[in-house]
Image (cartoon, rainbow, N blue to C red):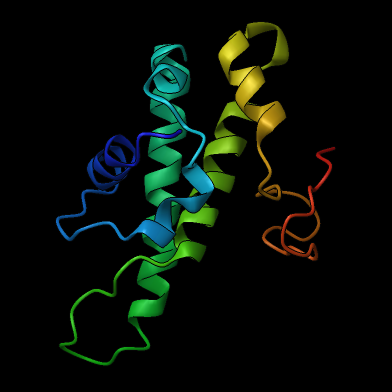
Length: 135
């Protein structure tokens, strides 16, 4: 069983979010454990977390324009988290396979999010529960 408290705290820290993280936002992160981050090399961890936060914020901020002037920033939604995961996976993939840690390789092998790069980045034609094969 995943430690949802740890996942929510870590997610809030990475995103710099001061609002509570709702349960639905952590569904894609349910299998993540503290040792998953601890066992990454420092450069892998920093790259993945930085990419995750940057892209999740960009996704959220794009929706902010829909709120109108003076409405503040929108809350994160599940799609923002998925975009962040795609970016984190791309950051880990950018480390050459021979220089990548075993933990990074394992996390990539178990990642079910679509790739963030390629001919149609972000296009996810799969249905719920269907695994996308990575190139």
